[in-house]
Image 1 (spheres, rainbow, N blue to C red):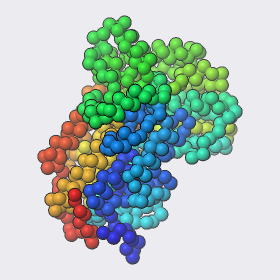
Image 2: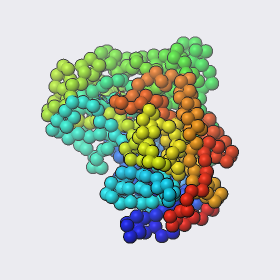
Image 3: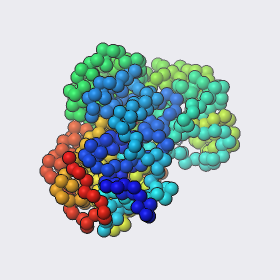
Image 4: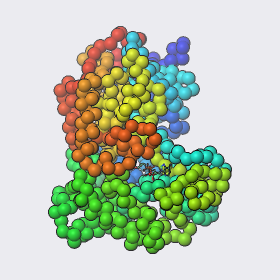
Length: 552
Ligand code: NA7
């Protein structure tokens, strides 16, 4: 098929992929291997998605690099060398570029291509994707690999553009490192991004003010160079370990999973267990007992332990109290993994401002004003998170059959069968979409899973001589209900988290991810094995000049 533009300037492809992060890159690789003509549209000026944008000081993945990496190529697993237990943003980005070169991906990636709209042209059975610069492209299939945490969220405060100094959002950090040496710096937010960047910024700043609305629970990373024997072990057993990651636990990450309830242990046993995990570091802490996310009393034992640690580490009792979360169970807002976060508040140049005590009134030319005073600043960092999971999809104007707008369909919360596809939107897939494990999992492996499922699905459709697949409305509704029921059996709904959209005013309060990787993977496999149960596969109108792809 000739993919060069027609006289109207429209180019045609079999598959358009939106986003060149981990998921989009692998989608390109797989679809290309299936004989499909693919183009990836990437808004940024380079590849890497999350790891391209989140360049803030201290940015790291909180899943270990040996696990947070592609599993699809044994050669790649063997040749890549992670240097630390938790890889830095810079190292992950080097890995992304290595992968792009190794699999010759760049030639099908269009950078600086921000998608404004995607419209299903029903008679032609094609998606028409229009970029912000007006360029238009067509494809039979469209795959949204737009990421779950890719639309930075600014706080709703008065005078947001009044501050005259430089401002930065952690999720949209400049390429050139920012030098805060000697400056009066403010950080708004105390989620994962803040907790990683605050210790680094504190080392440079003259004075750092941290503006906290809600304290988050954090456990130490104990990051260190990777021991050669650990790397050797993983490289020797990668296939088995990856299989375990897919089949054990809820999140697609291998942890040291406990099999007993916190309430079955004595207080001394619990203390020993929590201490051991605190000493080892990482989110493994949350697996000390098997009921920490389903039983509030069990959860309280872990929360009390962490609050005790905060009180030990932070010298000023008032600051320690303010840093101690009390309003939600531990783990129901994503647990943070830090390096020296709490100890940073013992530095003389760091002050915590508790916005529950002195509410944020707004930004002014000199800095941040609270109900108590104005904090004069030279620079301000917004670590205020993202419009998670639905933000990137709803920012585009997506219209399916009969002009149905995705924004209207999702007005009361996302409706997506298996988090992969929605009724009314034929041939449009979402990778790690709402209703799939996504952000509650090793999202890289969940992305891989979706890419493989989608590629098999497209092969199946085309192999049957059809050209259209769409989720059935009833199957979709049942799945959405099921996602909610699974969440309701846990403690997750007790927190005002971005998992339920609580950080975005007006966003419907719906728990968006599906909890449980193994169950989810089994369901997807069953659906496919049963001839794509819950989907309608059909032959639409004759294609508008699109060659039927070679299906290998
Ligand atoms: P998060 O976890 O959403 O954290 C955002 C932080 O910003 C959080 O502490 C918010 O407080 C705070 N925030 C947001 N809006 C405001 C306003 N208006 N005033 C004061 N404080 C505000 O985002 P991150 O980037 O840290 O992490 C996102 C994920 O990326 C993380 O879980 C990892 O998976 C990677 P709140 O808690 O809403 O009261």
